[in-house]
Image (cartoon, rainbow, N blue to C red):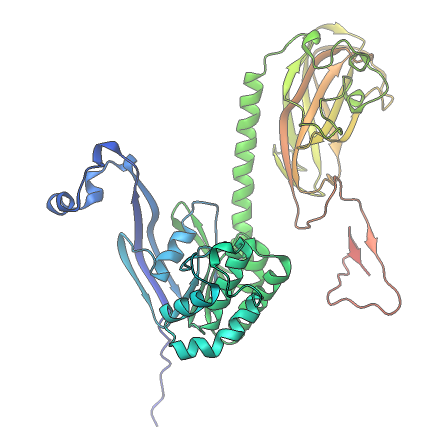
Length: 476
């Protein structure tokens, strides 16, 4: 008896060397006609590279039967363009796409809906366009409407629907035609929380039934939970593809490096633009808080309270002022290894390092640091005088470091107020908001700080998931 050989199934979706280019608006070519393009050759060849935007550049991708593939990347990376080409709503400039089986796509909000006719009529039109007979649509109509929760509005014109109602009806039609391949773009972001959970449950059901799913989402946790494989797209090409945790972590590291660069460039730009004014130029100069009163968040760094801090007004404006007897020459934010960063994970250590330069000897000085969020709220502030460090002598170059063992700020962007000043608050050099940093977190808590804590439970209470790590925010 001859041995049978295993023949692997062909991919359900195959994308081969796909390019997609768009012509930018170019006045020199606005009268270029189809006839002139045919006579002269390829339309894009007539345009300079600066006049063409490449949305996809040589993308090749196979999606297997029953696979759930996630596509991640920043805005403009080419994710939605790829989905449109696979769905057939856009044509590639070069390359080929083949799909084995029926396909249903939820790509753009309300795509395929006619605003002037009712939801009922749109369901039938869309169902027929997606390959169902009128009888098949009628058999599934009640389920479609019920899933979308639009029983009271199904006979109203679609133009009266909210964006969430559009999304619910579009998703419901897409999943109830029972496609072989389901394409979903980031339209779920407009749905309410309860319906999003319903959609995710439906996607999971499709996955269990062996359907092929292509999901584009900025919700990395959803991608991590639902997808068998992840593709990270960058600048119209596939940067990496593979195991979800590995690819998502690589993408997050790239995002952090990108933010690092942007924050570093912002610091250089703001520092160069901030000419040092005199003490009299400081906001609030002349009132008692500018001379070191014991009230207000500004006291912690030896100057007046920032405009809007904690008051509900607009966040304070960046600036720099002082007498210049002592200057803050350099500011560095360091990690545990002493490397400079502008992005830190919540709970990581951070050291704020200031390089001071005193033109002449001073014996009346303090160094202050304040942390503010984007609303201008003071999250924390202190200075060396408050912490009972008596001033001795400052001359020439000196380095001051404030070490924070755990930076327990929730995810967000923060600004530093940095100052070297007299004990009474008179500033030698005050830098407001010139230095920014970001904190990241996998936990979506709210407020300002993440306080160390532990949950405990007794009696008739159970949880589906518990952790026994014993750390911050753990459960026992």
